[in-house]
Length: 264
Image (cartoon, rainbow, N blue to C red; front, side, top):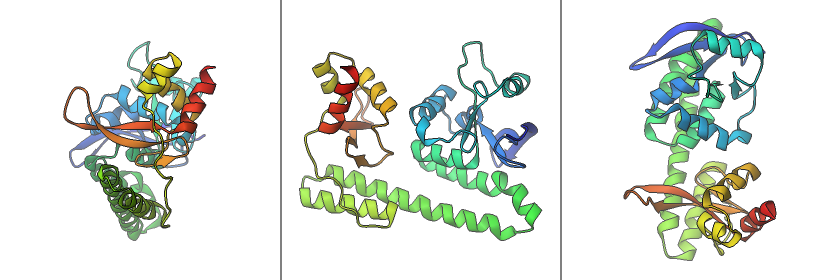
């Protein structure tokens, strides 16, 4: 693992953060979860929670490094640069460009993609473009990202429409179109079947809905949003505390059985 070093405060437009090199490779840039949280107006505990819930999707040393669990040298780096908030701090994550892009898929908001475009152009790939004298490198990468972003947004819109329609045939067609935007193939998704909320499963098994969610995360039952798999699917539902729609994972029979087996 390459040595980490702070290269000072970076400023891209209105975005200001701590510039870091190393860890993911020579001259490779990185960002702290703390700075990412500030950029997206989130609490760092929320960003850490997203990373922890999707930990199996982030590869150590490639996408993410936890400075508090990697080595004494990295812990010392975190301490010397004021990255440890308190004695209760459990994780101090830094993310590579690849790790940050994965996090954006989970954040899934327009501001996130707008910020990422700026960071890719002016931070992550700046040194590589200068060193290799390839000004087209960043421009090409930006175009690739924009195309992927557009496909993801279109798929998300198709998915939401599919979940709102009462026609089974129309719903399946829309879901297939959403799958094509993400995979390039007109994949017919799993047909609708009996579904359970975390609350319903918790009531059946005598545990809380939160525990159901924790077990599901530990077993890796949930897929990325939007989407579905053999264990369940993502759905949008009204929040109990506001009119805002929030994502909710609904369990299929196989998902219910997996939770039941884990607590038995």
